Amino acid sequence: MIKNIISSFFISFISFGLYVELNPKIGNIWWRINSNGNKEIRINNLFALIFAPFYYLFYWFPNMWDINFFIWWGITYLIFYKCSINKSDIQNKIKN
Image (cartoon, rainbow, N blue to C red; front, side, top):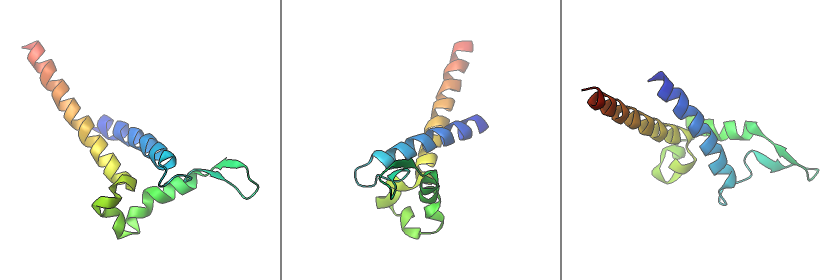
């Protein structure tokens, strides 16, 4: 169970970070152009977006679920959990 939580967190974090950066409606969250015209990585902006649902209620509305990290993490965890149950069922059937 702990393995599923940790694995789902890292996969959610990476996929969420890529999604918000590459989505044409959002973008420029953590890979930005600074005032000098140079590109720079701003991870703090990604963390601000991740923790925004704790400060703003509208992130929990279904139309905002695509930029709510905790929804991503929950769905990813459910997928990992479901796959681990199926895997253990298959292993038990093979042993019997």
